[in-house]
Length: 170
Image (cartoon, rainbow, N blue to C red):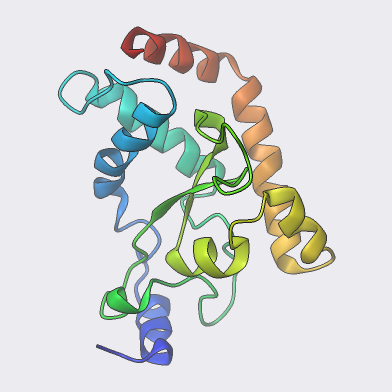
């Protein structure tokens, strides 16, 4: 196991640290899609749709963790068990917290976060609370930037088409 400093240096040196885990995300998305009301969505039945969903969400984040801020050493990193990896191991986060909301299981509530961001920045708060807590910071600027891109995506015809196709798997 490496130290946090060593882990952050390794992430900074890997040009693909933010995208290297992409292939695994389709598999991890399935359980979340099922919770969001698409119980028949599987990698066997609709791999292209799942991949399209992941790609669209990831694109709104510029293929980086939701809270990513440019810096010499990354502010987003993995859980200690994954500090030996030189890439971000993504977790699915809920912008409206699972711990504070009755129905956080909606596909437009999911985002991709590093373990550090999911557990230490968002810390079970709704994204609006995080914005208030960090208002005026680079993190708040990043949240607003990604939220604007998400708003455009969720209002788009391509997103509506994706939702319509996914509805076949309810």
